[in-house]
Amino acid sequence: MPPERLHDVAELVRELILIPSATDRPDDIERCIDFIADTLEVDGVRVDRYSSGGNPSLVAMPRGVTRPDILFTGHIDVVKIAETSDYRARMEDGRIVGPGAADMKGAVALMMEVFLNAQKRRPGSSVGIAITSDEETGGANGIGFLFRKKGLRAGTVILPDSGSLLEIATAEKGILHIRITEEGEAGHGARPWLVRNALDEICSSLALLRDRFAGFTGEDHWHPTCAVTNISTPHPANNCIPAHASATLDIRYTHQEKESELLALVHGSLSARGSIEHLYGAPPTTLQPDPLFIRITEEVTGGSVRLIRAHGGSDARYVTEHGIPVIMSRPNVGGVHSVHEWVEIASLGMLGKIYDTYLERVLKN
Image (cartoon, rainbow, N blue to C red; front, side, top):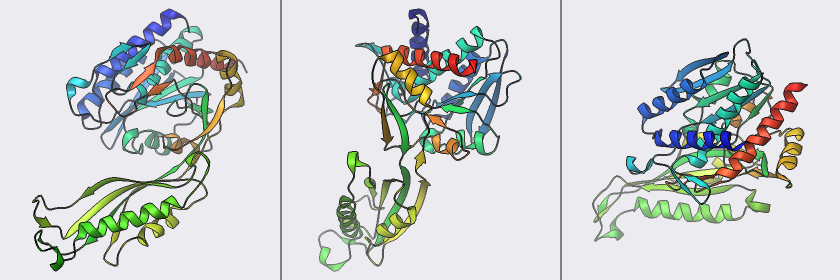
């Protein structure tokens, strides 16, 4: 990518970071979508705005195109951080650093530039871009809504939300979020022998779950995992034994397991008074990266592409369920979900060149 275009991308990344479009700031999410819509509204391009469940999104395509050959997709919602003052961007060691730089405003800015450049060079090019704002909370009202309810379709979708410049994802784990609860009796902390401590029961159940999940094995952790993400009781007093205690679990699993089997495993780790609440679930995803994209990546970078399996989930699940192939790699990033997120500027330029070359070859056919 020429230096002047890369400079424009870097400036756009910084502008997007400065808009604190965190999941708890709906007005700023709307403002960020407005900014992107204004940027994409150029001659010959139609920008359609949508909203589902209070989550705004947009789709931009050349006028007259309804099913683009290539569709770029991304999200601008970021996980919330403690202070609004931390929503700033800085340049450091060839990187842009700031909340959302890695996940995924760096990639969104790049896709916007590539899309606009394609329309400038070849007006009417069969390329589209969809930007959503709810990926961090499941994606059902963003890409899920656009593909399931509005009929959005494409020949191939590019979603730079996993992997790296030389790592292209071929699969993603399934997701299972649940809350487990144990019941006991309230009591005074000075007399623990008189009551059943619900928090003790939760700790026992979690210890058993840890041991059971430790029995899963596989190369590069490609097996079910269970992370405890929260433990809570309703009692704020330090000397009060809780009658109720709960914990939330983030379980990830491969195509070899079934959600029902994992729920049964968890249930079998609880006491007779324990219960399970299903919070969220998404199946494992199989991706289909285009061999041409892989070859172009190697041509441009001079490196060897490694096909990987991603442990996280993404909006790709809403695309692949319609039989549409998804290409998933991204710039080199780090510090995801922290105030120190970063995206490497040089890798943005390299990925931009890969995108430009891929579009040129695909759209010539």
